[in-house]
Length: 288
Length: 258
Image (cartoon, rainbow over all chains, first blue to last red):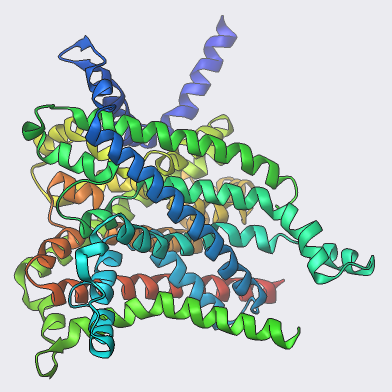
């Protein structure tokens, strides 16, 4: 008893300095998340599945379908193009200014762009965009016609603009993990460049590539700022439907619908991230 | 390398270059054009438009507060779990990386009750966002600090300092901090970039930070919004490029010392 009491006292003394960190995380991360989980199934203190059921009605279902489509397309296109760009960067000298500049630009666009990217595309292919005016002068064709930039197609284009750089950032370490000895070994055994890529590099990189696709998917599904800045009315995708529910839940007649939608987002992102962990565990064995 | 491969590579570089740089060029063009030639009116608005200027000031102040809060919260915690409470290290890492899995949008949906208390205790101000921003920047800051802490022999450093009579506070501030300075600088830079671009939480909580104001202005004054957007992107680029140069210099001096 005395020993365990002393041990408890020691653990307590060790844990005490962790208290400020713990409080901050609990108050500003755990409590909001738990609020969402509870708010989705408890209304006025009673358990109910009404809010969850509302997820399976017309608007919410079509928003979910659009979101999944947007995330899937932008993740696949972003991953394919991003892998090529990462390969271009790896084959440039590692100390070159070009490489540093490209990587810094990738970080900015992938992680901190937000609303600025929406305005970048408004300035390019918006109604009075630079490219729109050029094309109009040259061919008389209105590039921005029908307002496609504000639809799902436009969102996909703008999302690709931050998905490709994100792919570069997450995929570059895997490419750099390919040891030159493996290539030399393959070549000394008589493999051509093509055979090396087909039989050695691509099989090694496949898990990392799939993992990156999943990460990009989750990133696009949870993204809000760019879409919100671009689409000011209507809510074609889940994040924008959450905005509508948060800002005008009276109109919807379903106060707290935002909780259910947020829960839906947690579930989708959690499933994708769990799959990501499984895939990455495989790739870490070789490329780390 | 064959001629064909070299040309493929060049074509690809040009293609990517156009895709990524043209929108940035378009922003510069869009924000400076007028009916008859060029104007810098939109750029002058960054300082002269009162609402925009206030929003910039609020965002910069928020970034400073967030960085200060993040460093005072995270640095002692991360040192402590490496030295004394090793059992908690995985746990701290887990919580630091958790915001990557919980989208900011989810946090803001559940944040209302918490912020009722925060504004009740501290008053209504955009600066109260600093609390939740400290949590949002945790994953970025954690990685930068963790890399720096792994590069020094923390135990030996602190034991030496302690055996010379320094307390925990002095040992941390005068011995450990100077050694992990580069990590603290990168954590600060990255957090600044995150805070200056954060739109989700600020807009849905109804506070006027720079990105919120940019979107608001976009409805009436496109060129000014585009100018402010380009300014934030350029600022972020400068910040991260400086960081990359800083780490390179650090690495080269380290190899000389060896």
